[in-house]
Amino acid sequence: MKPFTFRLDKILDYRGYLMKRAQIDLSVARNECKRIEEQIENLSQKKVATAAECLDEGVKGIDVARYQIYQAFLQGLDDGLKSAHINLTEGEKKVMAKKAVLKKKSIKKKALEMLKEMQHKKYKETSIRAEQKTLDEIVLIGREVKI
Image 1: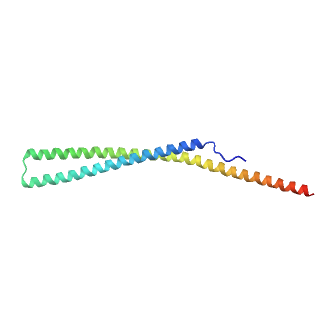
Image 2: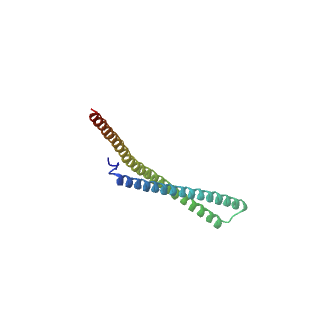
Image 3: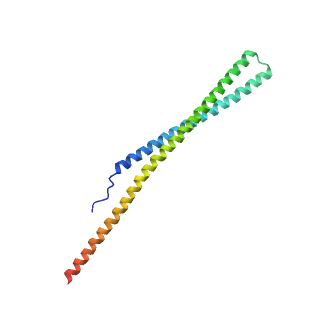
């Protein structure tokens, strides 16, 4: 009997490739979110440090021009934080979309793998039956020759 071959092996390999690409895309999106989170953390720390510095100088006595510079800088940090939060929510949406794509791709690949397993099992059963039939015929022929 011929060895088992799955006619859709190339498609299964391609679906595996697509699944790996989806995994890579998901990890890229997650890394982008982590980078944005780090950026938010850095901006927050800068804001706290600058606000503390402004407060210290305010206690010592600060001129109006320098105070306005501090306020403009703090406003810029606030704007940066807002845009980073917006980017983070967009990045999280991208991550969710990439997860959904990965799930679809893995389901498609798993379906083909299950089909392959079912066909392999059917092939094994058929080959066992054919082998048993051959052995039965050999036994019958042996008995007929003895008679």
